[in-house]
Every structure is written in structure tokens, then in C-alpha cells.
Amino acid sequence: MSGRPYRKGQSGNPKGKPKGAVCKFTTLKAAFLNVFERTGGENGLLEWVNASNHNKAAFYQWITKMLPADVNVGNASDADGKDREFIIKVIHTKDGDGGGNGNGNGAK
Image (cartoon, one colour):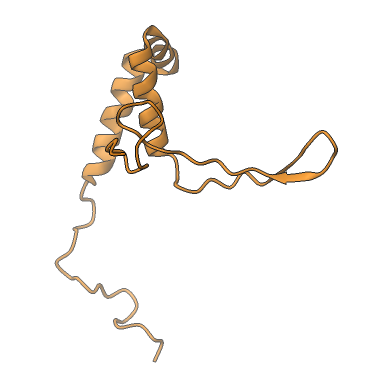
């Protein structure tokens, strides 16, 4: 026995998603990318971010939610040539003052 619960080519859910069915996430992603391009793409986003501190704060909040929780940037050499490891910690806050408990709700 191959250790598989089903024979090769046999689905565990025979009434599952039919071939050719459109993934709703893919459709939604395409719609967002279309709107992004039609509203100026990267240049339009940059203009919007720089238009106000509120927009800048919103952008940073979004981008930190899109980044992975752990980012490995590897080692870098300092001025003395010694290897140093850098750790980046992202803390989500609601009130934007750097307080909060890191869970995004601004509770202290």
C-alpha cells in the first residue's frame, strides 16, 4: 500500500469543485488589481499616501498586515565588519501612538 487513503487520481471528495470552476478569490484579486491600475497604479498610490498623514498611517497599517509575521533579513555587517543579525518587530496599534498591546485593538 502506498500510504494514501485513495487511489491515484481518485478524489477524497468526488462531488468537490468541478473542473473549470472559477476561483472567487482569483476573480476578486483581478478586480482589485484592475481598479489599482485604473486609479494610477503605483504612482497614484504614492500620491494618495503623500496627500495626508491620515493616508500615510492607513498605508502603513495595511502594509504591516500584508507582511509575514516573521521576516528573516539575514545577517548584515556593521562598520567593524562584524556580522549582526537584525530583527524587525511590527506592532499594530489602533491609536497610532505606539502604545497598545500589539494585537491591533489599541488596548493598553
